[in-house]
Length: 615
Image (cartoon, rainbow, N blue to C red):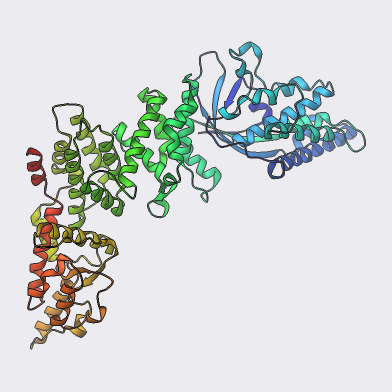
């Protein structure tokens, strides 16, 4: 990053064009908000300069030393990005941040030029050089303007910058020019009739200063933008990338930008895309998540969501792709993202379930793979194979969650799987689903796919309640209950919103008061109590109940509670309680093994899925 402080004259007398990306926001500065304050600042600096020169003249001192002693006025910072330009042509800079400020300064200069021309002042050509490039170095008429506004305002800009006096009404640009001209006319004539023209012009050109931040290849506009604008207003990396894409399209003479916007980008303006996902400082808008997922999928390299602008810029520079093609692809990935994460979901029932579970698990690292799969044409990836591929991803993830496995390198693991899937997709003879299953089975990143025996061991021997969130426990128990209902032909199907059910400890957490151990030996009682304290939170002792469940029976004797659990709802995970005479350590372990077997059916092993793919 090259950051320097320059006077307005130093910035704008260079043979350069400052281009506002096509779809940046509207010009929003106003008389009350900014114009009046800006000219008040100019007038104050010009007054100080005029007085300092007057004192120097009376004292017989150099006026240049007097100028040097006047405190300059700092206007803040602008962020510029280098754009490709033909050899020997005008230097090009995209205005990443500061378009409102630079646009207003151009309007201020134009208003002052109006007054100077009216006065036939010799200073007029100098001010004009800050508005226009020399005619001998331009190849197109629009290149004469130092600043070239966003596409919406480009028809108006030549009129705004012309020497013809135009009525102010109808456009903010014209109103600003007229206002600045009126203020300048007054400021150049002092209260005692003295001519203050030079003081006003010199104050603006030499004492109005900006910090100019020129981005270099390794700089990240996203981070710089956040620092300049404050953390209280989160920056959308997608807005920066949108401007970059459409600006490149324009500079490459790719026509019909408005049509491209309407066809490919306008769906992302929907409020649904502005919702933030994630927690705390990690929360990001859906558009930013989509953008990082698309970049990961197409580049086969893990994108950093905190540096999206920089990474997308590097990808576009190296990939040599046309903007319409990139926009069309983003549109396809956007539709795929909505299929995966919208409330209604898309696809077969089992696919929708998997998408909902990934969303509840807040596992963003799998998103590039999920939306890449949806972006593959149905001719290349049949619905059944698509379903099995997603089921493999879900099974690998949920089994690892159940067994408490490490999650720290999931981004790299899913990227390895994505690469394997893309290799398979490039070969018509290969199965994409089979490539995903085998890549997961091969333990991407050293992260293994737990076997059925590991599931059973976890269900029997490890606590769940207090270790997993209640939402995740409900997800596990609900999925197992649904599978039990499906596999029992004698059961009348029942529909439950499992997310609304409550987790119930069959043996109550307060077992010491209500289900006390009856052992004669104190040492045996102490050992059994320690074991039971762990046992009460294991999966075999947990079930689901509806809000209708009578909580008054929760701590009563087993003979009472088992009937209440079995009778209050058609939940299969509780249906077998009526046949159990005693609820103790042994029955809890037996039930845990049963639940583990059904969990293994809901989330199959790698070998099971490979066998299905062979059928």
